[in-house]
Image (cartoon, rainbow, N blue to C red):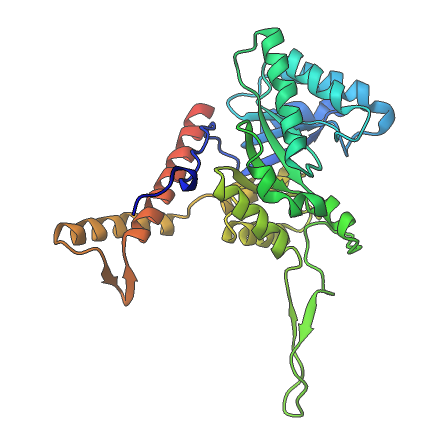
Length: 335
């Protein structure tokens, strides 16, 4: 049967391949953090003009961010600036100044993206700035999905712009918007639990659930459907390394490929959580050999220790190898 042209899948835009296992938040009002951040092992750094900056310090923070991008050697990593939201008096100036005056900028991080139009507006501003300045380096966009409206429109946002590269689950503001009143953002809530049935024979057991599963799964699916990187947001109790590691592992299991670090101590935890393990790489090498041998014999599937493996597993192995190769290229660029 011939597929009608209007039913053919849309071509995915070509986007830069970036490593984004860890994204370190750095307040733009604190220059003493800049050099430490530049020397860190974070894959991505964003200078924050939004939540970490008081209203009276917005203009100063913007100027500091531009100066930091221009004056500090950030090496090979991806550099982003989180601008203020489009519903604030600072957003327009943030975007214009940073994109015009900081050639080192890689990404604009747009908070509280609620619709496709929000991204398209920023895209058009960046297009006009590039025409005006002759900037040849294309500035990308990453967005925070951190409102009920943003989660509801995740699929439309994911398709909004060829500049869009990543969607981040902003659990903090989403918690506020959903009015759950949790005070540690990113951690599970003991209130979101169920009890097993009553029985005279055994005490009832309490089972915790993941109250953010719906939002995270929707964001991850929208990203994978449209060629974006799904990134998990903050875990604000930076003293709780075990909790952060569990949060990152859960995100990786849902298909995310990175997580925010709000403290330098979280960087290596994120890098580890979103890197293939040696066991996974060994599995990939073994499965590749097994499937290739099986294909040469004219078969497409074979048993492996009681588990049926086929061409889908070969694709999984290839994803793991490509991920490892990207990490190695990043490490090589770091020198």
